[in-house]
Length: 536
Image (cartoon, rainbow, N blue to C red; front, side, top):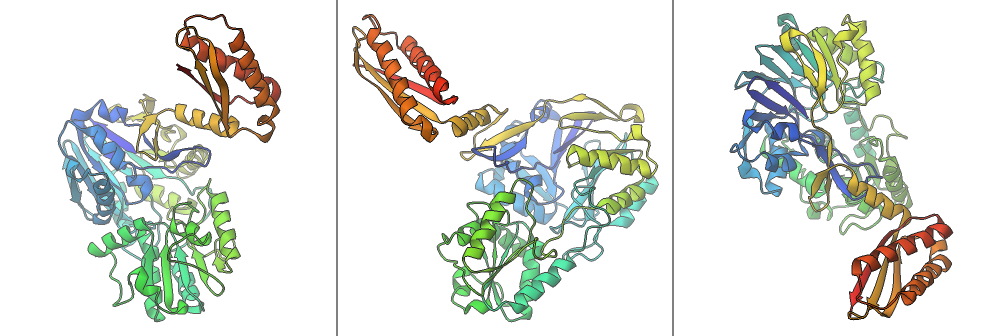
């Protein structure tokens, strides 16, 4: 998320969600903390979307409810990006909280003193934009996710002529994608993936499964073209994939050849060699179609010998283990698995490599370069690249989440930090800033849980029954001797207590302390201890 503010006008560019790492237990999505925007709600003029990937629209269902008080929120983007966003908002019953405004490449939108210009760029999803924000202070450009692919499978190439003209007119600052700066040269064209898909679908003697991201409409297009060429039929499996394909067809981004795209039930009636199934789960997600197919837990799709599974993606950092497990299970079913380790042309990135990032700098010729959308090492390497094309080091502005980049008087600098960070969304849709819940879940996962039930007389506090221990998640060594010993220590203390009106809070505190000390002495574990005192 990028916030652009000038005078009394403020816009937001993108509102993305990030999937959690494996250790971030119980978290379904990570979204931006938008307190800075909420505190300036009267200045908000709208949200602009660069493209329809999850990391650019995934937070919208959580951001929009926080922006109440100024009427419907205007949202601008390509028809495809807005189509995907609308699906998410409709599921959250928020479609009446926004005004969606589709824009085409070259369109301008005036929002107060800010003039937004949408510029076509090539990415792994069609209808992706860079956004130039023109203001009295100058022009800044957010590249969005881009590469300079001269032969995209879908859509037009990046509009380099318009970028050059903007450079001629003068650009104050370029906010650039940096994620692939470590990769020398240029990112290959999507055409190389199409060649691989064509060959795999042509040669398959069984059913063919292609796994990719649910929003990767370009991959679906390639599969449809190859299947039509070889007389095969295509179905998609996975709720999000089905929804996105339906949206892309309705908006005219996909136009399947006659009778090639069919419902899953109809395709499964065909002989295996005539079936091509496009499924979700290229990152090994447990609930996605591919993982369930690999574990033979899918209700409809089953695989075996002669079947081919092509995983048209590379593992996102942090997902390597889940992807590996899925691939292992596919091999166990007898499938021929085609993936990045065996065939390097199953996927190409949608992000610019080093030479393309250099080209962008040389086309735009900004006064200031601001690397974003990458790890800090990516931004540091981008700083070196910017220096190599003549941008002084003090004009490459290094930022962190929440950094305020100020261009007051035409001079750029990082001046302070806004309230910002990450907000964690759990599977119930509850969200909060900070990592308190994560720490509690880590403690439970590492050391387990002990519940203690104690029953005492309500009048004199005498022990009637218990303490009864129930444990979850403790090591095997803790389940016999140490637990029994802790139980006996607590029981002795309870029986030695003088009779009198029971003080429940005191009993809970002592039960927790005695048990914790006893278990730690024997096991070095610190489980979460929950005593319950009942009065009869």
